[in-house]
Image (cartoon, rainbow, N blue to C red; front, side, top):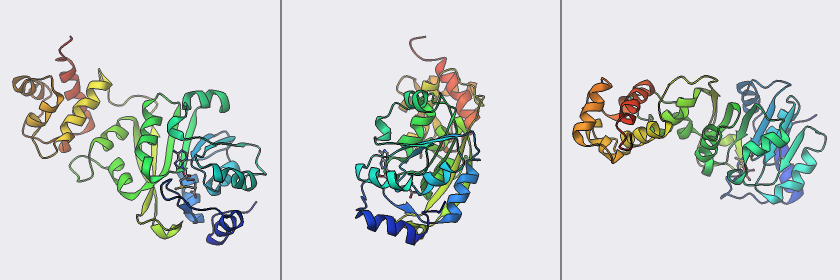
Length: 289
Ligand code: SAM
């Protein structure tokens, strides 16, 4: 079973079908064998795996996953790719293509219906324009996902992987690392795609923890606290937390003292553990209580 990942093979398929790349759908197809192997390794792919792929394109990565996994469900928005995928994935009876917009798919239902209830892995070269909504959808909607191994814009991977006190650390780092252990799997410079995008990419592995590492009393208040702390990055926590909207300055001083956090610190220096402690103190002060 041959690969589609060489420049020539991809060009051949595209030309044969007269396919026109859509920039607005983030269509940059991967043409590097080595990166594909790194993605498969990063996903620790094995024969019992149930995979969801978002945006199979012409099926380059899909085929390689189909050779190993138990089942692959590939969700592709672009109707003009469906006949191409029919051809390139023809020999696989364990791959199913769904012609839908991932943001409109009820993923829980899809897993029940097509992947025996999971657990699943999300493995994909994601369209750039909706990377974060897709990843957060899988993390926040109680989807039985164990690993997310995705190609994203380099800067987004850096933010997901960043630690406190670094320039890339922000609300996205905390949101992702609240659920997952993160790992940079591979670098993919722009020349590894056709057409060539004007950004470089990185494959990041997000390994979802089976047990919660940071016990928070209210996830809603935790994420509101994080958002307020980073919402006004240059301000001290004492000032930034006024963004929560329901604590007086004295109450902010009080919760920071209770959490043993200096009020002059900035949000970007707090570890996730500190955010968890702080949000529990904030939660105890929520007006309706
Ligand atoms: N997997 C292929 C590869 O690596 O060569 C293609 C990756 S390309 C970066 C992104 C793919 O996502 C395209 O096939 C595009 O049509 C598809 N796509 C874009 N928006 C989508 C959406 N909302 N739902 C599902 N697929 C989408």
